Length: 103
Image (cartoon, rainbow, N blue to C red; front, top):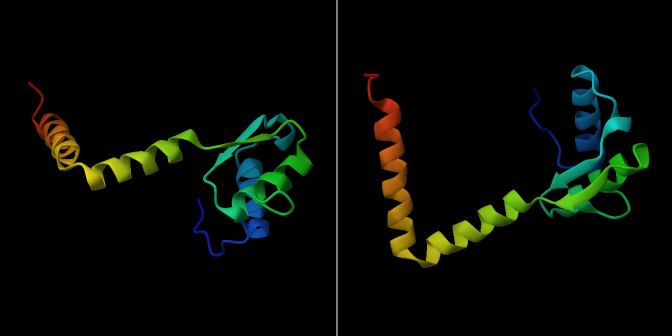
């Protein structure tokens, strides 16, 4: 849909709003927002979350739990060779099954 050309809150907000219009979604129906903790996204005065909230009062911001989990897993993999090996084996099994011809 878009290649993000700027990290500014104003630009990202405009992109989000344009995507909503293209998908025929009304911003007034937005009930939540989830982003990583970057200030351009979460800034209380002029971040994306506050800009969206000014357009839709019920669009509450929540820090993205999936992003937090991803960061925790990256740290765990970095400090634990056994966890890293287990995840690599799991990934290999998944690819083996997915790439196998259907029987």
